[in-house]
Image 1 (cartoon, rainbow, N blue to C red):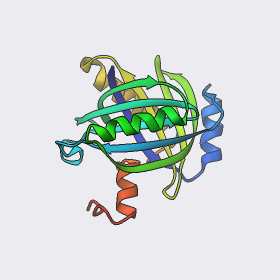
Image 2: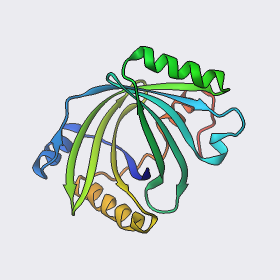
Image 3: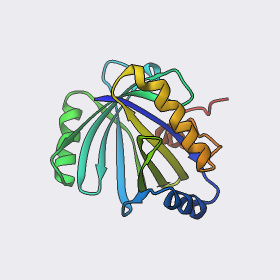
Image 4: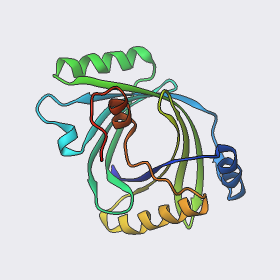
Length: 191
């Protein structure tokens, strides 16, 4: 448990970005297929409370993730609780069935192919992912973690410095879920 500090960016030239990541020592992982099924709570509106709850399939791995309300600052910063559970599609289907029985309802499933790059930048661990989000486009996310509230401002500042170093300037503030719901006409675009 801790705080996730991240920003999502639109990127014009993925090859140039990957070259720069390589130059600053990032270690790349093979691409992986992810599917995030977002769930609606039976008694509160996560869109109003600015929370998220999902079941993620990451290759064969499965995880439950809760993301709390956003904190102030130049990045998307929120408490994150992530718990792994049994591998495989049948375990994922069973978990979805369990939450269905508890009154949670699927909102949408967002599929993407993710290429992760890991690096240490100014003594802080970062993951830079290049996401090909199906039907939404290609985006870059920079993420780091902080264990305590007192470390948030420093982590946010370091993330912004890394984004500058990578030439990323066009922040995409919407989540993949919001982009999907807007595209489907289920939410009005923000002004």
